[in-house]
Image 1: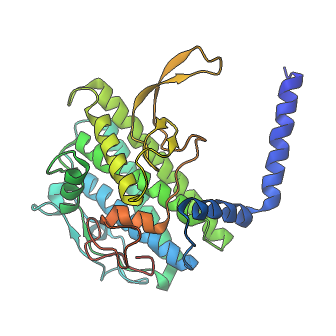
Image 2: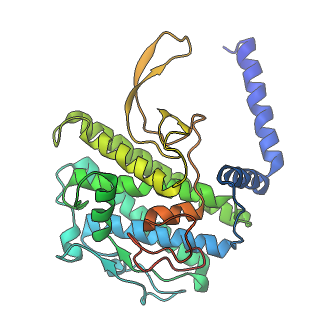
Image 3: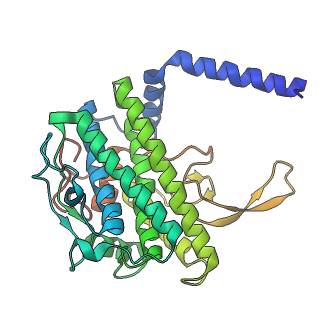
Length: 341
């Protein structure tokens, strides 16, 4: 039964929603993008909608190939996804895989739940590639050259995890590899969405962002659960890896920022990234603390982090966000295709 307090709360929520709707999607997007510009202290580049969607397509080519290799032992073009420029099925860049070729990248799954998650995600990432290519039509860029072998070795070494790393070696290694991608995708869509001028494109970007956030949450939840079971390594090993990866991603995106300037959802961590951690959450009464796991990668307002395209380029290529285009290295050895590069 509703009380006076709950009725008042309902009125506040309804009135707030009405105000948000009155602003309109484009206005809200403008506010979000304005926040990104203020946070970064730099003017927004003059990108068109096609530029932004092609930037997203480059990232989706990368993710789709990673998940498809892990679950099928094939690249996306081998199973019928177009990778050429425009509407051409062929003509895109190559994918560097393990020395044994694509077939050697199929993970020797032992955890059915992780395999099922990976299989579903592979389908969804391929759907994203097909959707963006269809939306861009003749303006779609071809798949750039991708590296899913040397890249992981370089990042693992730089992040302080190991000198070499094979994300296709086991279920657990796959989860760590997936962790590298998913949070980056969420921050990329959040950061770029506000620059879109078409409401249809903004709606599509928001929809893809939501799916990437589902993926990121599932990866984080899976890592926390497997790590707690300690069946593959001492408890805390995997979450420790995520903390190192998050710190390294944040340092790439914010090379001049102090490492602990941002209050995150789980406490003071990195500038714009939060590894998985087991902590205590103090309830509103101020006396009760309950165990909590930082599944959410967000600021202290529980809003997911947002990165500019230049920051994303820095992470996926291992370069500086203020470096000159094209950014080349790590996952994109010859750079990304399109005007955001």
